[in-house]
Length: 480
Ligand code: GLN
Image (tube, rainbow, N blue to C red):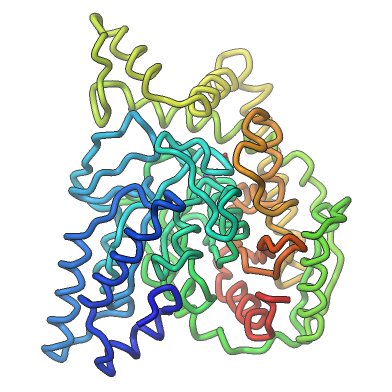
């Protein structure tokens, strides 16, 4: 068994034909993860006991002739902002260094109920704030494709483990691009589903109106299957959607002739780079598959970064108030009064980026500035969402780059938060509108760095998105 090459279908066949057992697979995958992790720092913790227990249950079900579930035996990793019962969950923060959650996130419950084997928790930017994974209190993650480069962020660990092959699939979270951007930097598939498609119960809140859980995989089929497993209404999350979850795999072999694909001109202005060339090759390939390519416009795109960084900091400043030295967190040893306990615990525990966002968020929500910043940003958000609605009356899907540039070097953008924020330019609009979007690999730059192509569709049209992604994959788009 070649762990880094495994796919979900390969595992299903292997188990059925008794080429290996789930227990053998889990122990090989864990050994491989242990061996590879020092190079990338992608896992914060390996859940060996839990993995072996689930794998044994899968084997027992197989032995009894029962259906072990669609993810039976599949090694899965989960971003460390998603809580796991009895298994340390740090959110990449020093504040939560010793936090052992008393329950599992719904997505984790569902993937284990489907037979998925949780190998461990992955490194990420502190509370999912960042685009390079360098904001983790536990050290940066290195991109397995080029170890001197960042894997992207904030779900850098979840992208890296799938790229290096230590997990077959993983879960990340996306608030402003944190699944798609690392997927593009590491050369894997990353999906941000419609807002509300996957329950956020058990996802540490960063910006609640923008947070999504979604899958990473090495092919479209595996991403679709993992999404199928975790999606759907959850009574524990009032914003989870009631809409039925179709079998996404049903669309994977359909052709795309006649599909109208829009290229928003605002996403291509000035994109004259290796990344631009690769995306152009991807678009040419879609044309060869029979897609009709149409230029469209999303006129409010230019306001998206400002709008996002007002809304997400406002929500973050409120959500992070719970980390106060009373619940969840370490408590500052030196605090003598209650107010010192709050101040010192938070002062010592939060990293620079979290503090920056708490201050910005508190500012934009404060009396006197609320209307000028927060309320204005909410209005702009509606305009951005309306741009998409109007465009989806003309086209079936949109195609854009994921990031203006490929994986950059560690440290390269660390001193300039604005530069770092600008790298989210193509991804945050999808989150602001709440529509499904994904990154698929689209070849390499001259330097051998992966490029990601983004596909966006209208609310709940994950089937349309997967259909286009899978046609692209079949036509050889991942290596154009
Ligand atoms: N890079 C963006 C930010 O720093 C997005 C983060 C995310 O999607 N969690 O906010």
